[in-house]
Length: 281
Ligand code: DGL
Image 1 (cartoon, rainbow, N blue to C red):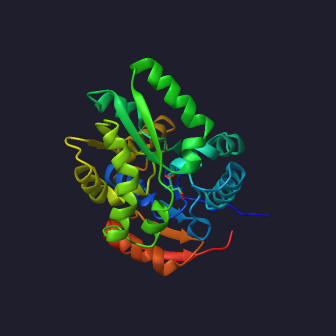
Image 2: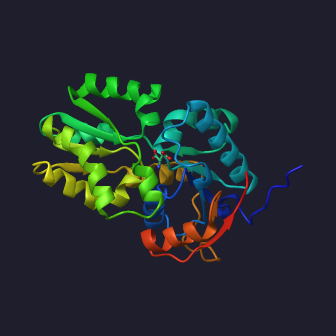
């Protein structure tokens, strides 16, 4: 039988944040900025990444295994900091944990349509995200409401390079050129970063836009909106940890691959020294 850790008050329990790998760190940085007093656990499923080319059943199984681990750690809320896992598995996670506040990340189609001047919005995401029923429904709904046209662009291979720490290299530029140029050529003036790994190659994406002849193309990242939604849910449930709470906030990292690799990603991407453990789940 699993014994759940106890905390001085429910608000003192940590928030669990997970992704297939290091991408969710782009969401974690917004959560830390908005809710600096919260205890956080970050789980990178790098041993099973990328999720983007896998079946829906595979992603659901991984998401449920991670949710079981994190709820066993007593988390008071869960952030699915991965578009692919949100589109494929958030329904299953919510069904298993109906009492737990669960926040997901969906590609920012709505802010993309609002930001676009000509109504042409490119969406960069994984194959699995772009094939998900949830995403296609969202696209149809927002297209009907705003008249925006969404150009869906899968980006196979991009997560793999980012997981390897290649953020600014000739290989990234070459791969991105093939994804970004067709969108610019079709007139997209706004590009939605529909995968939490992509904000880490935002500069390379901006370079690819310019190389393709694009001007004034906006990039949309939803990490900040996710942090605000989390804050609203915690506040509504009376679970925000007060700023004056005694112990300083903690941040622990877990990964299903190399602990050194995740610790190094924390340093490179967020300039943080974090204790990381490897797990097999
Ligand atoms: N960060 C994940 C997302 O937002 C990457 C998915 C993958 O592992 O392919 O979709």
